[in-house]
Length: 607
Image (tube, rainbow, N blue to C red; front, side):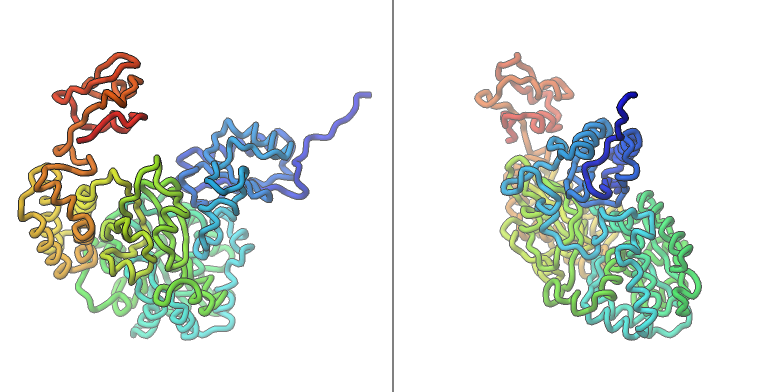
């Protein structure tokens, strides 16, 4: 008789969990195909009873996606492809040997085979809002409940009055994470005290800043935390209905939000008589059309009511008269996601984190010229240096840090001399920037700060609703001056004119879009005025960005004749034999920069 053999088994005692990131960034990198390949391979190997594969939300380290975390080992796998799966299963699951070539490459000082807890990107963060990221399937309410979900709502409904909830929120010191930083508990109190039986709450998920993806990722990773926070807010304020205003460009977040709402209703956590405590509250989803001005509360309300998204004069404030004239409270996604943790762990715990005036943590999307792009959460009071170099891993290719822009198009550019600035609402305001919703764009030495200001003003010109003259005309005039400066046609009085226009727009615009629109101009003038002067007086772009003010050439001494620059030049302006120095014909050059970007020997010069 032939000898019988048992099917291969995983080397673990108990079940292994493979946590596959299914946030937008990783999904675009085919992470769902990786998950499918894992399911097939696990089934083929007869390991279905021993291995659980979980599609999680965004795990934060977007630069390394598609990502998979192998538990209980805590091994972090990066940039996986479906064809990597058979080897990964064979080596790690069957033989118990982590596959180094699929791992995150550690920085100096990290173990050669780092676990999740060893990687600076993760271990330097403190998670409150993102507490469940990468740990649960965001489409399964049971997994959220298993992580203490809905305990806060149960506690509130069973043992606290609405006034006690508002007092707890006020003492916690939580400030609105959507940009303005207004105290959340105070705002809730205004809405509760406003006359009227019908009240409404809104979750603003319409983040429109270039490079910002905090709210999207929170909803994709943990939509139930937002819904629970809104239910607590509804009880405190006295609202029976809420809206999530989410931008149309977030299909995955929207899908998971609908799933979460349906499951919460099925479990009796939305709808009538929640927890049998008499709370009637439900949530609808409203899809926005992507207008940046809807970040302003009254514009959002106008859009939700089916009208043009334009701001209105205040007072009355939304807390007094908002959606369909009902007292309305609006907070953004991150604010609502903080609420359950505060109510469960207490105001004193939350207020012990952060600074004297800015409590808790803040979620940032770190993008630009930085090694580790992604989503991070740090305590208020963390320095820019800790984010850019500690978590972000510094600047790629050994280049120098030049500036960081916070607060989106309405924020400011902060120079290298202020790298040790602590991040909170007051400190950022003092240096000419804002917290905003949490976008953080890192720039290196090759960034032209005049061009940066021009780019953000161009965005704001397109996004202005046009209702008030200062914003409609003033921002367009500033943009026109910046366009002229970048084109090499700057005038001697342009800097003074920019400052005059900026102050006018800032002081007289109807809403915060116009009021903060001059920040990119004023902050770059404050810290990088020499670059404006070089453009106007010297006809030079020091960073080598503005096409009208630069010329390309090739250094005969540095060129190795690899031919890469000639191959990428779209107009045939570069010639030369292999392994011989090349030459560039300036009469043909269109200054696209392809040769500069492709050269591995710094032989392409920008003058």
